[in-house]
Length: 436
View 1: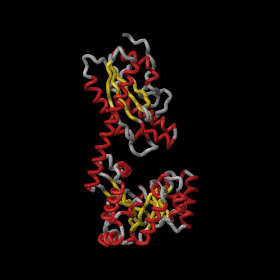
View 2: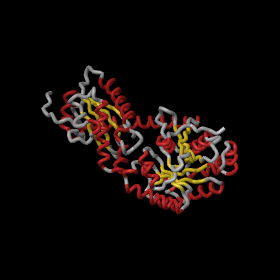
View 3: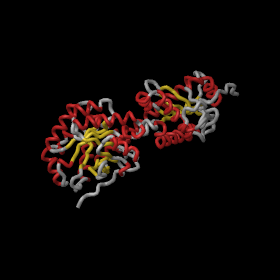
């Protein structure tokens, strides 16, 4: 049967600017259902259709946080990345298109039409191509959400095929093949989640976490005021970054246990900390419920490590504290009575930053890098940091600016009177040098 309907492809890979111009006018992304006549004709002629489906529902949060334009850009980049992964296998009859799943966010489908008789495409090549797409997304999926998100989104991939049945509508047959690919993607996602969960529990039980220490500088004297202990998972794994590590802990219900482990390892790695230097420990407000982190047990631990309570500052994230000020105050008061100091971390990320500072009266206020990055060219953020520094002075708290990377940022922060800072400009996190 000769095809008489020749519409433009639903996606034209590489047109008008390529990867760095995802919204170029010549790049077309359409829903497969808009081309039912073409799809039906292709299915009748070839007698079969292969489907690769990518679940893009993880992009829904991007739209809610950053708006529809950010979402469309991410989806466009995703379509292009999928087309690049399939480029050696795509012909002019194939399609890369969007598809809405039932009760979920958007999906991207690749429709591949090959004669089913006398070919191993559907048995061998289609599964391998789906694996190629999955590997490409795992390696380069972060491109799709840059610069909005730091972590690579989860993009489950499934595959299926359908054979032409002259007794059924072609569109229905394609839709059923897409449904089978959707179920395959869901199964692969659950299998992957189970594997990641097992890797995380193995990591937790074997204590395979490394603590690195980032210097916190006195911006006037350029002397080191202290160090922040930063957790890292195993190198060359998806659990290396602290974000991925704690996200998996939350998903598996083991957040408290990971928090306890990281604090324990951070203290152990700080044995023999230089006199006069502070150790900043990240912890959840629920640390107060850790039996190993209370009263005499904690004092004995510090004595064994040649540390004093006054050497230690507990960093509690504004994100955790702002949901329940009472829990934060309970932890703050308990540890302050033992001689520890408290820092409010990630200040400036949530909407209630000033409220949190006023309510909690921490000893240190750590300003999130999102407020520091590029502050030398951003007068509104300069005014915000100036106001926060004024509030801190009235509360007898000291501000630490996180994420300083350029000399221009440093000069601006010094002009604003911020006493302390940390970031790549002063050196990357590394194992701690102990005093003799």
